Image (cartoon, rainbow, N blue to C red; front, top):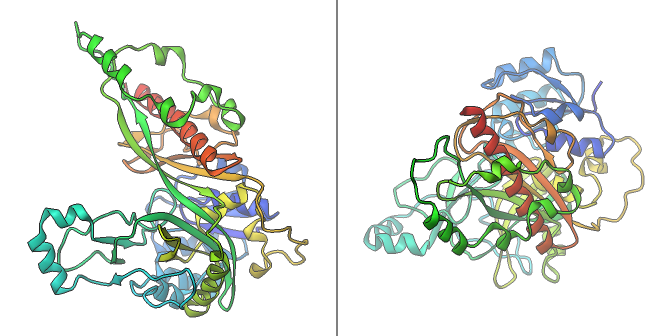
Length: 451
């Protein structure tokens, strides 16, 4: 018997949220990570399973219980409706999903103080195409118009695509994408729990991007190569410690139990030029400007009623330089931001009375967090085979650890790291140091395994 059935990739975060709420999850995902077995019972599913195979898994393997769909399964509207006809669904049904994911979903929002809609267009207009053609590269550099859209298959577990992607022209956009006028600001994610008629704001997280420095090794250095020039350049180049604080060896807290880079790894003298690999993450909860939080709560209620949003959902938005919130897209399912808020000490979202998963929920504590939590999703810069990472298993700071021998394509998630700190700046610093440390260890081991 299971309290919640979780289907889809990146189920570890949702399973951890269930365990914090005192629930027993049952999960099925392709290539489950090693640490998922400690949290839930796991069902078997093929990596390229279609909708019929997921339904067959529910019939043959899954125990009775409500179903929580992870991205990208909830983007398959026919599968969502088929599951909803057979079992209770912890999420929005087909009609609400179709309306919430439409490009014009947030074009008209209630007029609330401090909340301004973005200028959105579902498709490029004729005058826009003409201007883009005449302006040429200068318009691309200015980034007057950006493409935005929901990407359920993002390696980080979902979210909107970066708003900083400039529109390159053309008559049409990709399915599920739209144009928005560029707005400078901070990318935020607001988490809600709804029942189709009302909603409760859980908290707000900030999306961040970090650069991880990676120096791929070569098996045999070129003979008679003079490394003095390279050493001089390395001395002039800002070190990783200058950007993210001291070495991860001195990092207090969770990362102190991480395996250190071996002396043999550090002793190799010749390496190619350092590469920088982008890493996305979240920190939270974030305090909003004065009087913005009550208005955001009202907006959440309005969206829940308009699109019949049920269960856990999130709102992607931009906090512009004037302090206005600019809604960007609706994420109508479990978001990684829900886990970030719980890691900071906020009440478990899966225990909320709206979900009715616990018959007699205990008195809920105040929705405040004593700390700031951060999670970073480390992806691979190229195709690798997951190396043995047994010494990471059981370490609270590292999760989503792949099984050894699992093939990982370029851009696919390697693992996740998480930290807690007293403030946003210290959280960013610790998260960057830990992510860089783990990334280098994994890539060094992957290269050693392939050599």
